[in-house]
Image (cartoon, rainbow, N blue to C red):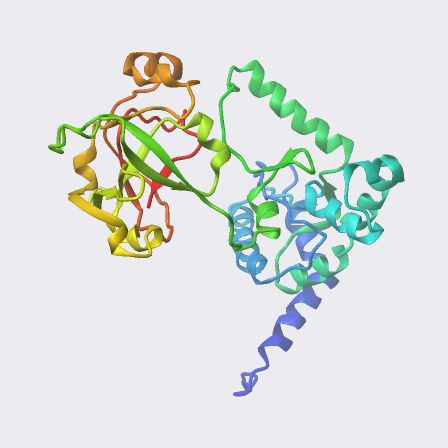
Amino acid sequence: MYKPVDPKADFPKQEEEVLQYWEKNDIFKKSISQREGAEEYVFYDGPPFATGLPHFGHFIPSTIKDIIPRYQTMKGKKVERRFGWDCHGLPVENLIEKDLGINSKHEIEAYGIDKFNDKCKASVLKYTAEWRQTITRMGRWVDFDHDYKTMNPDYMESIWWVAKSLWDKGLIYEGKYILPYCPRCSTVLSTHELAQGYKDVQDQTVTVRFKVTKAPEGVNDPDMANGKTYFLAWTTTPWTLPSNLGLCMGPEVDYVKILDKESGDFYIFAEARLSAYYKSEDAYEIIYRHKGKEFLGAEYEPLFPYFARLKDPKVCAEESNQKCEKGAFVCSMQTMFLLKTVLVLFILHQHLVKRIIRFS
């Protein structure tokens, strides 16, 4: 009565048989045409780059993306699913530059921007056949025959229409956002683009002296503001110092004030970093130890005068439209210099600070 079940089932073969049935009978197309006139459900799917082959990172999201349109289709809705290709971005341009053996904007202009663009357009869909084969084999229902490409004028015009509609509704405003920037390409970089060229390298650093002008209430040191006492701060980005607005210390980190016997100056920095600055213990004398949180309220002389006015909390608040005050802030820094949670020494505001100078 029943067809016997093979105990050694070949699941890949069964999947291929289902795929052949779907293709032979246009099941996906029928799932759309049979719902003509029904309520539509639009599924917004971020398109992938076609300059690379699909990998495991695409498989799981694609499976999830297939479930939602299928569920809405089962509810009787018409769900068209056009596959798309992201044709913009630096990855394509970088590939063509390598193919042509050029490495600068001037070389691109000399080669011809129109010819360079044509090369980019031709290469951007390099792996579309592989993508179609892989996505189809996964069992995902999607329309490759009527795919869209972000480089097409009608697509770009639709994006500008969206931007214009948002503007008309008052939903677009000007703000400030810090992004990685490529000076060679004269453009900001996406997280994906930045990751393509990211490397762990050893870089030169500087240690900067900040002259103390006011001692904190938590430390009994009337001589701290004598003009010979300095905070030492370590940074890998000295070009940000002109915009420096604050110094940070680990609340539970031990800091020492030491006398540098050679110069006669006094320095305050993390005790754990003594050996990094002095080869011999005879070169310095420890005056006292305190936790970083006890230095809250100390003030120092700015390296540059450009933002000295922001020392006044009222001025800081007026110019930034934000609350400016002393206090504890959380930062996710992970460096070899012990800092994760930081304590602000004097007025510090995240929208004004381009880089926190770290104590080490």
